[in-house]
Image (tube, rainbow, N blue to C red; front, side, top):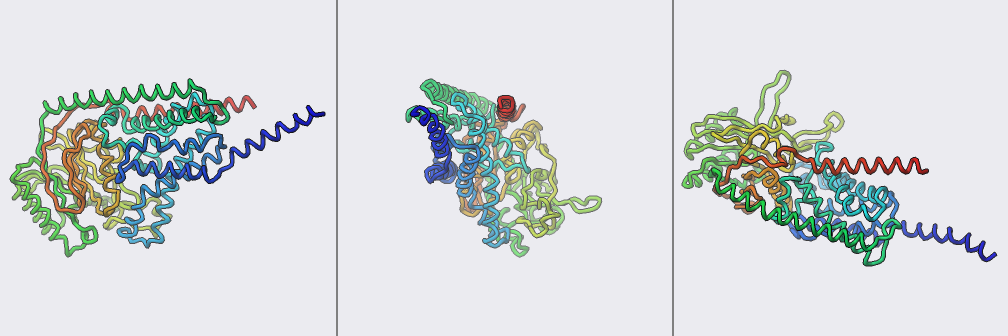
Length: 539
């Protein structure tokens, strides 16, 4: 009789214990929010990049023994806390320059944050659903994370803003592997650290993962493997910096002047201020004349009119170029007359000292709601933040401009955050990458610093110097090792001139692209498919 009672009680206790473990409580949500905030603090302006190496541990620990559904909710919570605090400046931008009332811009920020948080939610759900054995966690956790970062880079036109690897933009020895693996390789190493710490924590505290025991060999193997990989990454970085610096010392260089006009965005497109803006840019350019630059670079839409079509203002620009006596690259809107409509472009003109136009680059990757309205047929009430007559038309991806013996790879505004666009430029023989932008939209928020930090990885991935001219900053020069040679402060008039090396070497990443990220995605697809088959035939 006593034995029968015991047999009946065991499943009841076991079931109730399991239900209790799967219940979300305040501690779970606190841990998830902690991960989100720690991730944000890893990025500019906070710049506590070292936090990234364990920022995900609280979330991962909270996922222990949760169902996939609750794992999803917890990941969504972590993602929301991260992206709302990382992208808070979007509400200010949309309210100030998008002419949206604040009560409308905040919900849009929330919607974008929810979309991005879905990637963290799916990450958490996949870990709890398919990766339930501790020995697979070390590599599958970073592999899942990288796979989702890669999908985010192209899904719905892509928004790869501040992927995890960008937290290390100022740790030169660690980011050198991006010339093989791209920024995704750096992200992988960071998440690998989080996975190793998680396994060590679970073993030391005697806790399991999805009701599977974490043994000493799991924890020790994870820590040892991470340490080995980290040492490889560090020493590869040290060797690569030395080899690239040697290459730079034997390469030709050009002298470039960057002009930061610091034009108030509220006045930029006002016809009453157009002449004053041009005069300001010309005077700042003349300051660089004594340094005899080979090229002067103005920011995105530095001429707030249609260059070559507004004759009076265009002649003013040409005279300023002639007086400076060198080649200019200037940002300007442009248009072509198509068969049935006028096509508008966000462009950059390369101009000679006699006023002759060598070539023009048209921005290829446009900003949704900034330069065109997606789903305009269904969303006619939404307007653009960028001044203009109609939606912009995308230019040709990878188009480079011939300049003497070199080709210039020009990227306008946030094109620089898309690795494949920089690769396309280098594959089309660009010897240098030039990013012209207008970050005045962001005010003094963390956005200009975030935007600049991502630029550094493009230099390392492709081993190209980067010249960056921003209307209100941050402007600067970055060498092929990712070292920042010079920068300008925000919201100040500035003219800086530096020499930059012109490399022709093509890196593994430039040639083959995101093979590593695609391999991570492929491995996860195979693993998920295999798990589904096993479960189907075991039931």
